[in-house]
View 1 (cartoon, rainbow, N blue to C red):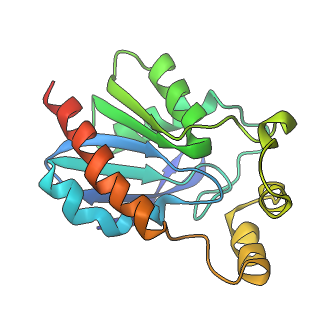
View 2 (tube, one colour; view 1 turned 180 degrees about the horizontal axis):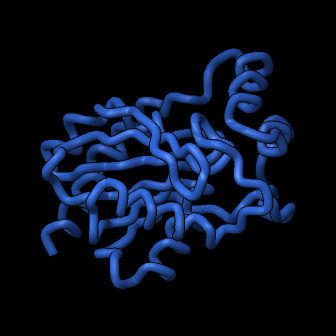
View 3 (tube, rainbow, N blue to C red; view 1 turned 180 degrees about the vertical axis):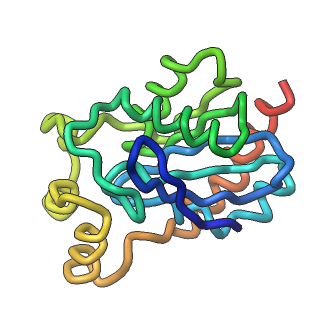
Length: 188
């Protein structure tokens, strides 16, 4: 696993690179309040599937600098710049939860570079209040926080644990259902 930063557009962007270094690149958009580190312990599963999964923290998350005034479509520029900095021409896109809209934006705006895309449990950008319907008051309170650090601290105080780990059933589902789909897309 490689966990580092790069300067893009005058900002620091933190990213994690796991799996097979020579495998098909997958640029993964994390959900909220997660970060790039959520897939770090699945190195072996990705490597076995022939995938290199690169997860960058979106602006203001984890180790990435904020980008005031950013838009959803700005993520496509960040993704292209990160891929360029890593010498990656074409790649798969994967996105989870509130990272879903970002994955869709990258796929729509970079069609010449995107080999395929998968959105796992995608939801709307949470700046849209109706997108919070059906969530508990605790979840709504956490979604209103400004960044990952604040959400983690809130979760530890109010929920008695750290929200940075996927529960075992989710981890198993991802490894057994989603990794094979990404690997199949890489072979097409």
